[in-house]
Length: 490
Image (cartoon, rainbow, N blue to C red; front, side, top):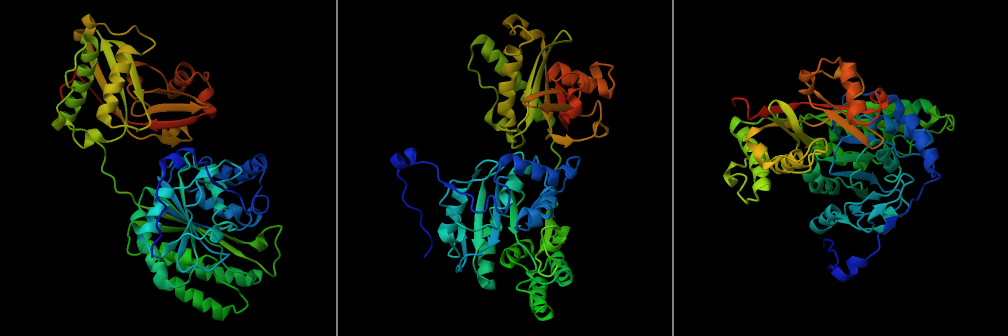
């Protein structure tokens, strides 16, 4: 029988207090003091602070031991993820250290997981969907309450990701390959570019240092093939070759799910990131060790370059002008025909609307963030540019015929760490630091005779309020723009 969620009670839910899964191993596996944890995690992630390009990471395999033993190995893999990545959710999957389960337990009891860096939201909607639709999923509180294999990954993820998405915590409690296959089938729809899969797994348990290196290399090489048969064969062979070893992979069932998820997918590339064992730690012994691998699974994302047809550009220009006209003359004229709103104009992206009058700037307002459809954003930015730019008086009705409208549709922001990665005149710059931000559109370079450093200095000083050299230790982002206006032939 599949799990059925209890009937909703609006009066109850309205006043229900949030439930938070408390830390089970904080203070033991990782520092529970926020400042101490921040300092430790900074030491792990700072070597990657100047990384300028990222592949799309769809999954990682990371260890789950105490940070003094495996934290650096895990952090190296998580550091390969773009910190600005915008995942919809993270599936964190491990194997039970506590109980046997005829399947897997997905945690839907808690609204959040606690951590020294702040609470982390649980995606209960996805969790309940898995429970309701799949017999291989159950809810077993005792599988999660004292389990560490998921918990230790959370501070690493929350520290690195600028936007921490909700998590789906899953504990697998069986080795049965047919049930592993059922779990994989249920998770398959979520294994896409919108979700990150974090597989929690330590490797060899309790051989000596030399045997651990040998056994773990064999296991790691098997994972690199991407074939579950190779992985299962090596687990069996290692039992014979290293009889004193308790296991080749503590969490192998979670790894098996991932290998089944990537089967026959040519767009997934497996990358081995790091290996150490507890004997490499100053706190470990050489005669009885635990092995720690980390891997990333990167996806080739096939994207068509965003572009606008001439008709779509004309539609956006018409929307901007009609919106301003309606405000000036108190009309309710539709800003465009419904059939003119193409799928492209429904895409969420940033844009600026710029007004010129007799060749001089009369208003310019835009927004990043990609939080609403392009055609709706143009309406909003047209109103803002005409009536809410603090540098100018609001546009008057008698001016409208002299106003020329220019629109800049923006590509997604790209973080840079070196101004050599910024192309003056082709790319715009966005500077952000301590809640202050400012930008210059790409076309600004055509209106001034500044060097790249002057361009950045003026943006930092005049737009972001950070001072002339404030850009040097700020977050820098570039973007490109599709620029078109009423004054050009489309």
